[in-house]
Length: 125
Ligand SMILES: NC(=O)c1ccc[n+]([C@@H]2O[C@H](COP(=O)([O-])OP(=O)(O)OC[C@H]3O[C@@H](n4cnc5c(N)ncnc54)[C@H](O)[C@@H]3O)[C@@H](O)[C@H]2O)c1
Image 1 (spheres, rainbow, N blue to C red):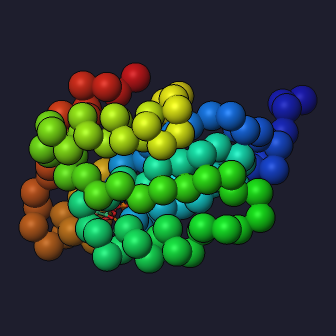
Image 2: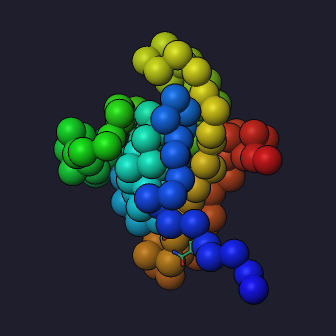
């Protein structure tokens, strides 16, 4: 019989530092919140500063969350991506996990049909 799928409660990421791009809403926000609840220190990165501030306010101080931060970053701008990594390491001392999520979900692609390309995509594993 197959092993049961691990739930967030089973995952322990204490001492790990993660960046999630596109974390102000949608899938990125859910993934960033999940990593934070699993004990990682998490940088929420997004181009939308207002939505980013709201996402951070919603998760900050929740039980089990060791540390979260919001950094405004446009992943199509190389200097923003470099600053994101430098500021993450300055704040949390390391970087272990990168989730390259930012992009245009169905919410935007249905309207424009466009997709963005990113300097962060060179770091995809
Ligand atoms: N939702 C789906 O069904 C689906 C299906 C296939 C792929 N995806 C991919 O998953 C990712 C997330 O999808 P979603 O539905 O949560 O999208 P969403 O539109 O709800 O959220 C995307 C987030 O990315 C941010 N973002 C967009 N461009 C950015 C940029 N240049 N720099 C930094 N942040 C930027 C937006 O501000 C937003 O907060 C996207 O890359 C999308 O292409 C989603």
